[in-house]
Amino acid sequence: MEPFAGIGDNAPEHERIIGWQAPPLKFGVGATRELGYELAAAKVRSVLLVTDPGLAALGLPARVAKQLEQEGLSVSLFDRALVEPTDESCTLAARELESLEVDGYVGLGGGSSIDTAKMLNLLLSYPGHPVRDYLNPPIGAGRPIPGPLKPLVAVPTTAGSGSECTAMVALGVTGLNVKTGISDLRLRPTLALVDPVNTLTLPPAVTAASGYDVLTHACESYTARPYDRRPPYPSPADRPLYVGANPISDIWAEEALRLVGRYLRRAVLNSADLEARTGMSRAATFAGMGFGNAGTHIPHACAYPIAGLVRDYRPDGYAVDHAMVPHGAAVVSTAAAAFRFTYPTAPERHLRAAELLGANLNGITAANGADVLPATLRSLVADTGGPGGIAGFGYTQRDLPALVDGALKQQRLLVCCPRDVGARDLQRILAESLAD
Ligand SMILES: [Fe+2]
Image (cartoon, rainbow, N blue to C red; front, top):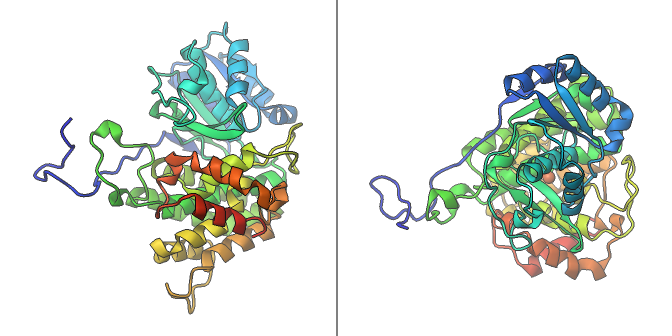
């Protein structure tokens, strides 16, 4: 195929086009009451409501199901979405539900429930295709989704993953002890319905970990290799979902950072603070609008093996009976070292991110500011009871080669790093993060 060139320009040296997409959004206190109206508007009459056992125990899914039934919808409930889902957990759920006929989906919960809903929509719409067909290479075959999916409304109950906005799912791969994902435009929810009231029952540790995910989404997408510092794509079909930092995603990332700086501590320390909860819900969604198009880099690439190789760490606040590192805790644990590494590529961006989070830049210049963003992140995490480093999850120096190996498999993310990053760099970043 001929190179894809701009009109009147036969050979651009760098990419010049930004791809940016987002779902329609309904946001605000009480928005959950409008779920039935929205499903009806999408011509959905029978729906699978996907949630997790912890949320089911709190009663919200049952209340939502009852409300939808009163509005004339037929509702099936799947309330066993795994926290940090895997290819196997999704395959087993799809097998169990294979005879179910619905014409729409609701993902109600954190990123895990929303991602499980996305996967069930995919696996039940196109039976017979194993999950690995779709997983990002090199772990999977990276095949595109064969056709359209059914309408899916995402109703987050955490302020974290931004999965309500994004065209991807994150999955553990059973047997390989790694996490990876599926990226495909068809996975983007039909509607993001965000009601801050649904986050009021989150325990402080979950609020904090979810908030760290928002924080790193915004910082990573804001500092990602810019869209116009990449070679041009041979054709529009080759342009990835993650195009790099760009002026459109920057707007969302900057506002997310400002909101996290203002509200994360308040939301963790006083769970009933609805203004702070609303601020964090906005931050999560805004960060999703940004990173879902720009991309994330080192902290997310490292988080996958940090979560995948965990032996016996069990986090506070999570109703799980297996070892796990919450995604948000995993991503933030290498963030300080990662942003120290990327600082020289764009000091002004790193300093601006810190300033938006509340740092005072008096007397700071590009030459002396390398530790400002790392220090700002560390203080936010310390004030909200977060991890001091990956040693807290049980990792030691001996684990570093395996963690480096796992991070190197996330090339889709590492290409978004603003400077080239290899095994020795990752080894240093992870070593610094043992007890950063
Ligand atoms: Fe994330």
